[in-house]
Amino acid sequence: MSETNQIPAVSPVKEPSSFRLISALAIAGLFSGILLATTYSLTLPRIQANKEAALKNAIFAVLPGSADYIILKRSGDTLEEVRLGAGDNQNEEEIVYAGYNTMKELTGFAIPGEEPGFQDIIGVIVGYDPVLRSIIGFEVLESKETPGLGDKIFKDMDFQQNFTMLKVEPEILVVKKGQKTRDNEVEAITGATISSKAVVVLLNKSMGAWVSVIDNYMKKNDIKLAGHGAKK
Amino acid sequence: MEQKNNMSAEEFLKGLWKENPVFVAVLGMCPALAVTNSAINALAMGLATTFVLVSSSLLVSLFRNIIPKQVRITAYIVIIATFVTVVDFLLAAYTPVVHKELGAFIALIVVNCLILGRQEAFASKNRAGLALADALGMSFGFTFALLCIGVIREVLGNGSLFGIGVFGEGYEPWVIMILPPGGFFALGFLLLAFNGVTERRKNKAKLKDLN
Image 1: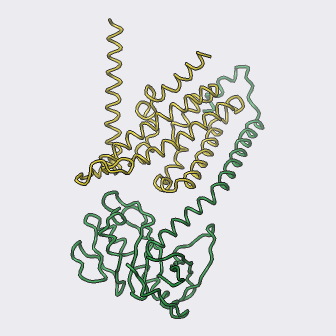
Image 2 (image 1 turned 30 degrees about the vertical axis):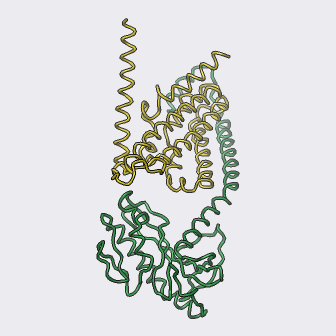
Image 3 (image 1 turned 90 degrees about the vertical axis):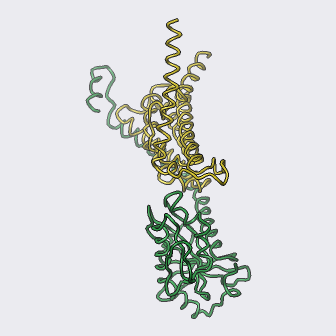
């Protein structure tokens, strides 16, 4: 590039000084910075509101009857309520959400989790009922699974049906479609075995990590579940 | 004045067909293949690119005599990257669903050679009015091309258009069309059709000349 630029050096056009080059870029950078900072601060509240709304919708979807939720953070072998602003980094491994209905009664716990699927990380949130010891709702937050096959983990109603009342103990098992006989079995999606299994691995992992902690929390604070948990 | 308008119109129209960035120049293949799995995604990507190209071209043209030649590419990239980031924030704030679907490809508008190419080839050498016409033409041509690919892929691969079913229940979608290979199939056939039409027009014009 420098060579082609040096050819017209014979022409009367003078080479600009380094100072001019630097100041031209500095000014460009300055304006760019101002524009970016302005846009950022103008859009930030909306972006955060969107994120919060998406999370809220997911929590309410997996915990039927909820109208409000609180954020609980793991502390030792129990849970503690924390208040997080939308800007705070929410480390999902350490956090669950407790849903409450309009009567301020507990509706269950929404547990976020992640697991590598067929293409990329699958991020989900599940509703857990500690009295029924069952998963009562399931929502995929993030997935790049194959359209038409793996994406059935959130598009296929039959698969979703698995999670309206799924016992989590002793552990969740995958069976072929149409072979479900027990309460703790999930019918896999035909043609998307890897995605289905990834979901089940994920569920077992997060249940293993959270069930006892949630039990401790309920016992310690003597919290009762609304009605008898899941209303279908 | 008359001539001025004619020139602008010409610069605008060339991007739509004669120098269409996707079908003729084959530029911007990354977004043209990657985010055209549905009509709405294709349209959103086209409009985001339009915003970036038009704003960058206008700015580059206005400052064409101030930006020193030696640092022009750097300056163009700063300008382009700024507008891309602005569009990224705006989409995240106002259309979070589209933003999530397009994902990393919004940030990648920075490296769309169509945009840098227009700055270097046109905006930096022409007055603002012409640069604007050129940028608008090129972006609409780009959006049109993306929309063509997106419509074909969504209709065949999902049996819907803009999310609304078009074939009814009995239709078994050609899933491959919304997978990556479908992008190549759709683009290939469109290029074939486009070149066929152009060729025929050329031949007709030749015949006319001979007569």
